[in-house]
Amino acid sequence: MLFPTLPFRYPDAVPEGLAEEDRRRAGRKWRNHRLDVLVLHTHILAKADVFVTSDAGFYKPGRRERLAALGAPVILAPDDALAYLDAAPV
Image (cartoon, rainbow, N blue to C red):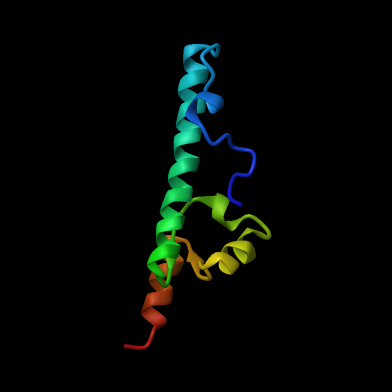
């Protein structure tokens, strides 16, 4: 859903044969994507109201609709989340 082409396993995403800097870069990217998935999964399981992120990957065309169907209907950038909360009834 979020990263359909990302290998599930670290060794598949960061092969031994890569140069050290490429391994570091690939490892950082893999870890970041895995953590994005885990954080969103936790948000959905907790049935939280608003998922707040500055990660542009969550705002790609068509992605919000698919994530809403999974249980994350409101995904906002930090500034938008503040405005959303300010407008919420007390």
